[in-house]
Length: 160
Length: 178
Image (cartoon, rainbow over all chains, first blue to last red; front, side, top):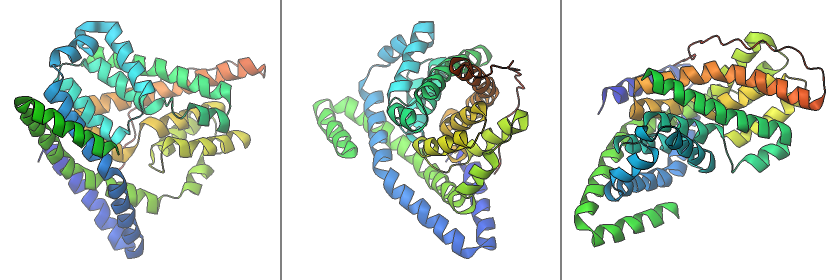
């Protein structure tokens, strides 16, 4: 168990305790919501764990490094950002996936761009966003988000 | 479905290539262990937020504010985990109709989309403190100019009064509550 996990678990534990002291009923329903979320997310979390195993076990690290590796520069960055915009993976399971790709030699910038476009841009959601808001707003937001994702990735690449 | 097909693929490939299969299994097991320690905490935090933070509150505070406080409020409210992005679209539409700033709504949606406090626990666990805080800090710093730019572009296209936009990048830290 990593240090990060210990810190996080104890923080959440403290929140839970505070909530329990304040309102028993509400805490119980919070736990019910949590249990339902685990049930709902559980299968896809397990599936992604299996997929990560498959990717790391079967895809040669060379491939990953040669498409989205750091030495690929701008092209790798663009590929990762584009993948993130099109794919629909819940952020919850995108983080471990990003880590496995990083371990296989994917560039740090590429992964930062991937995570940011993955969460901010939803091709799947675009029709819905256009219907609920309007076309101009939706296209502007998604387009600008793509640029912001690239900017974040570039700055992170410079700093880290 | 997804689970069944990935497990099927796992089994078939592992039987075909024994050595790679065992490596894949080992890696999956490692990730499973990491998940087990973090996932319940993430879900419990989501549940607590769902119970203690009402969606109506989010709407109320996003209302008519403008200026930097309004933008910051938009970010903070966006980070509260009150549902997936598509839940936020009708909310955003309602805010726009009520006369909220386009920049506020754009910032709100972006924060809603990419900064979810419970999910950031996952990012911490898997990608580390440096990566997480740097990415979040940059996101917060860049999303504000993005909202303002978006607003300017949106308005100029609409031929509504296009006013000078002060793109100030405060470089503020991301607000992180327990």
